[in-house]
Image 1 (cartoon, rainbow, N blue to C red):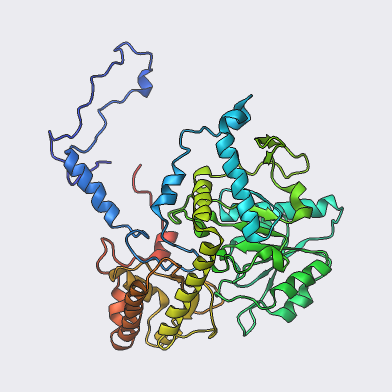
Image 2: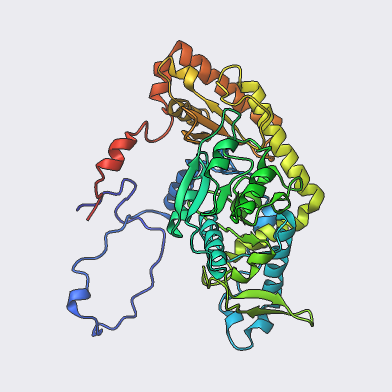
Length: 479
């Protein structure tokens, strides 16, 4: 296959390559030698720098654009916490496992232990493990802990996990991977899991109930304590998906309302750039009776104040090679320490205020399936615009042309033409007003010129793609 480099000019280069020091009579067999020199573009250093800089400017990022991606908490992450993440770059993760290595890493072990204590206090849990490497990994870890708990008690009849129909897809997936069957409870007209149907589904064969509160519709379930109590009466445990923890920091501790297990998304709530596939971190917290089943080894504080790595035979074993994504943990530790209790309360208050401001401004033009005070995010429907042939995806593509990352669309699945908006606490009123103006403009264009929205985006290097065809008719670009 012939490669064509658009910016390549014969004889131009931006690097001086040293002469080869490989002996001509090298031991490499002929079958492994190149028949022809590798074909590379011939460009200057300036050509190269401008090429990649301009490519980077085509990306959306929270440092350059408003990123109201619902359910993802795409907040701006301060540079002071970014710097904290790099402080331990020279610390090799194998050091604690080597003879005498614990002595060399007392600082990092202290940070792991301290972060676990911070997260336990914030969530109302008794102990936390930082091993899980992402939210879904944390879910899987939490369900494995629950399974180990029931197994240790000899309770073999528990085979179901209950989830609401608005749950993140990873909830039923994690439970299924742990060997459980899924019972899905529909959403009631008031926007939360139908309480009566939940009561009917609960029995002594249920192992756990997995919930997000506030839920994916951005609503706080007023029956949450009752749901936990009903589950406990039947011998089941309750699992809190911490994806939306940003809405209740300092206001509600999930452990105080009855949850037994929680995972926390450090890469959403606690100052790590989120998106692009990572990096992630999903620490898991548990109540006292579940501590023996946490992943092992764990960092423990000894009587002399030093820290050690200790194995626990009842634990579910390792779920990652080390103690988690350490740089993410360092950012989170710095973020929590910097803000303190009062600062974390401000985070949740401003996140909720911003979401309700957007909801109040837009509900005259976009249908609001559940017209009530929301928490950190609000969910609209483009069903009004659909009457003119405009879908949620058309509005999302138009926002790209106007310099905004689209909100989440078509999720949650129980809202037709869903548009889920989460501004987070870091956005100013001025930024939100600009976004609102564009959303109102899109609603007007949907009425007056719907075809204009069908053509969007028109300012990007690649226009509207046939995503269905792309998924079904994949082609290999080169051989």
